[in-house]
Length: 80
Image 1 (cartoon, helix red, strand yellow):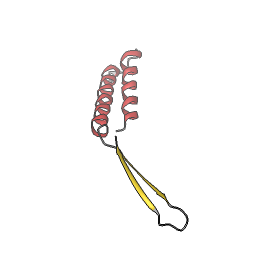
Image 2: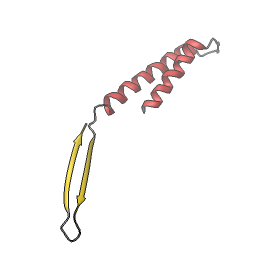
Image 3: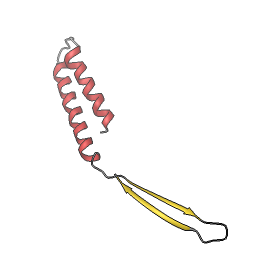
């Protein structure tokens, strides 16, 4: 589940729980709304816990030389 999916489930659950006042026989929409909000919040928490702390590495290689000279390369690695 991605972050956007969790946010959509959370919003849809809040709409079903707090904004609608409809009676459907055999189905309690408020309970369905609470379940969707719980699943959305759990999905957001898992998404941030799994994908949030990953380190990002950028590697940049610069090459330069004067005409007829060998190429010099320098590599820079940055981790955020």
